[in-house]
Amino acid sequence: MDAFDAIPDPVVIDILNKVGDVKTLIRCRSVSKRFNSLATQSDSLLLQLDQILGATESDSEIDSPIASFFRSLFKSIHGLLPIFSKPANTDEILTRSPKTPAQILAGFERIRNLEVELYGGDVKLEKGAAVKWKAEFGKTLKSCVIVAFRSATVNTSAVTESTAVVDGGVESDSEFVCGLKTRVVWTISALMAASTRHYLMRDLVKDHKEMEKLIVRDREGEGTVVMDAAGMKEYRETEARGDDKTLERVGERTVVPSVRMSMRHAPSLMLKSGICLEAATLVVVRPTGLASDDNDVELVTEAFAGDGGDCMYGEAVTALLKRRRNVLEMNSF
Image (cartoon, rainbow, N blue to C red):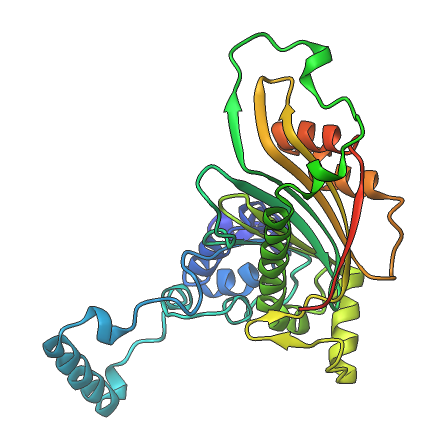
């Protein structure tokens, strides 16, 4: 027995938890029987998806007819000679496509905290515009905070404390109506992206009852979906009851319920850093009738201005919270 074999299993599992990356852990499973057993006991994981699920090229699109012929021939030979076949490599779990998160993580039995990083963002925007959002789900949408702007420019002149942020002045009705259609489109696009990610995680949430927190984000930092232990339990219980009305779906996403939107807007927002945001918008979305609008500040601060938040977005939402709140309602879609 070598020195590594003498290390207790709990210590090895703790080391593997520090690794976290699902791809690395799956490859570790092929090292030895011991690693194959211990790697699946990691409880804090990061799953990075390198491609858009269901959008990969098929073999017929990337292979010539000759290559397809030889592939089928070799498959037939392989089927006739099973004695020479090798055990499936665990790395194939990641290379075969398409694979859902639930399929990739099927062997992991003790997941407590999971972060899924998607290939890219979902919202299609005009050049220069940006939309950033964070949504919380249970069986359906609980809340969503959205920050957006049409363009960002850098002001090279000195920015003083008095001119750095919006002063909270009263916005006229005409100022609010101007560009309202664009702001509503931003909001709908963010909600559709969030509900698509929620739907993508449905089997994962059902299969892993031990999970305490699930975070789904994209590499570009566009949007984040969060489900805590209570939200995932609510989803499983609703699914178990067969409450189809609550878990309605449209295509490949969860239905967004009727919502109440608290919208704040600044035609031009100058930040202390010298960045000027045009058509800066802050939207707080909640299901109609389920929550009050009194805790907008707490919800927004947790999403963008809290620990680890982006400096520019944190400063922007702090300024936008001083603006007049306009309330709109939207039917489910």
